Image: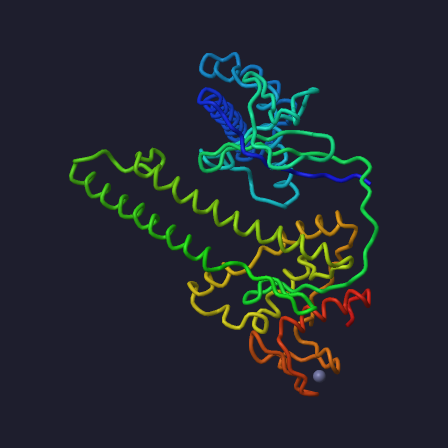
Length: 402
Ligand SMILES: [Zn+2]
């Protein structure tokens, strides 16, 4: 069985390597935006989009053009990849899976990709990678990789550089399947609830603290803008331009980006630890099917989330406590799979309304967010535990019926 893996490591770059990487990223963005411009014009004049092949041959011309000679300082494959990315975006647009491709601004997914690797380009033994036109750069090796390296993506996030390594394992053999079954319900008060009663809670306090600090910096950004605008009106400063941030604004934005990164890491950490703990204990893991959940969300929204209509601010705080179901499921599937288990996704209908005792289904069975109380037999329990148990039962039954 073929399996794809992804790893991410921080790069340790010297100043001149950093400058080169930044230049490669900028060049990719330039090529991407130039191609977007062409395609937008095609769309406006109702002409078919220009193909990747045609753009790639135009790219050769851009590199020889006096106004963009510096493009040839980038490895050619990285610029072609930028065009490929655009092509994929257009494909999604044509299939109505996404909006029309847009211009990329600085800081908007700054990266470049190396699709063709030569032997030794990924030098794991010495914890370094080879980037064309730069040479070897070191990375912080936090773990060993598995499989054959397919491509590398170099990116910058909040002033730190990273390399993402995509690998493919040709003959992956999961370990022997293990016993033990469990159902999982993802919630707000109890982030991850297992049917065996175990609860995994995200450290919301830490996240809230970081969010508060972000709010402070955001206010500073805002007041900086208004005072700058005032000065500009009086003719004491240049006009305020969002595209040309001052040093102060850049610093504030960096601080905000750093805090966001820390929050992301807390969440990621939580998801990995929880998924690993579940994978080590259980061979059969039942979880709600996300896609179906999205479809039924509005119908059951009032029961599942009473108070989702209350003012936006408290809604925001509530969402902080959740894990992203899609991301969590991907991590869980991989961890459970590696441990020789299986993740089963079941349709979520009625999992929170069905009485585990007598089978009676009614929305009144759940009078509050936290409480389950059967109107027929009087069975009372925690609503999340009931939901997790129902998810497991559904999975056992192998159908959408409980
Ligand atoms: Zn009942």
